[in-house]
Length: 77
Image (spheres, helix red, strand yellow):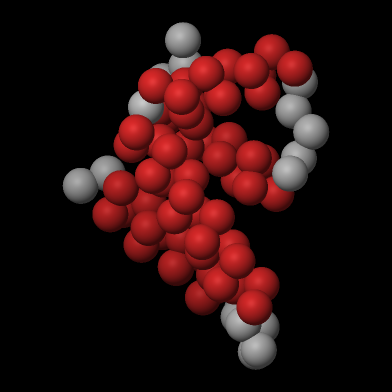
């Protein structure tokens, strides 16, 4: 079974729709089925990505990284 840390590291691939190896994709989905914390993290990441894509003015990479860092920091509290 995967640990939450692995899900956090690969959540961006799920949000971006990246094709993962079947076994990894299955393991990620299985973990998400049983871990409400990771499901919440994934939902928050998806919301952030949607918001950034709708943003009228593109954010710099620095601003984007700062936003993502804040979310990650709050998740680990």
